[in-house]
Length: 78
Image 1 (tube, rainbow, N blue to C red):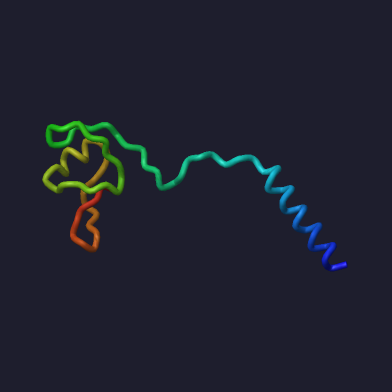
Image 2: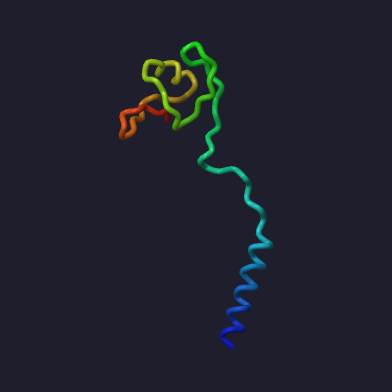
């Protein structure tokens, strides 16, 4: 009897997986980049990317800041 209940439970769970709508293919970790001109060069910038402090005012123009330092002393956009 317990084996039958287990089998029914597995079948019901599989049915729910098949009936569930597909989730969108977007991931939270995928950053949308902004087309920008930084240091006279056209770049695609986004949060988390390395940045140069000397261009901090140019990053601010695009709504980002170059203030986050990692353990290695490198700056990242946020």
